[in-house]
Image (cartoon, rainbow, N blue to C red):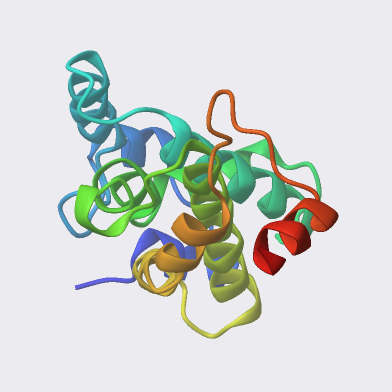
Length: 172
C-alpha cells in the first residue's frame, strides 16, 4: 500500500506521468491507465453513444483552472500529472456523460462540464481531499433540473411575444 499519485502530487513529490498514462503505476483500476480510458472513450465517441460536450468542457475547464490555481504556474508537466492521476478521465468520459443524470440541452451539457471542472479544481486545490471528481459530478447532478429548465434551445420559428401583447391577451 502506498500513496496514490494525486496524494503524492499534493505532498510535493514527483510522479511518473508516462507510467500513469500507460497504467504501470499503483492505484485504483480506471484511474491509472489513461490510455485504456481513452480507448474506451474513442469507442463510445465512434458509436455516438456520447459526444464531446461534457467531457471536453470538463477537461478543458479543469486544465485552465489547474494552470491558474494549481500553484505551479504554467507547468505543463504538473498539468499532465493532474490529468493522468486520479479519476478525472474516467469521470469525464464515463460518469459525467450518464444519460439518466446529465443535461439534455447542448448548452446545459457545456455548463455541466464546466461546473464539474471548477468543483474538481476547488476540491483538489483548496480542500484537504486530493481527488474531488466524484463529488463534483454528484454536486452537478443536483443542478441538472435547473440546467434543463433554464437553458433551453430556441424553437425554430418561435417569436417571443412582447409584454403589451401578453397584457392584451390576458385582458380578453
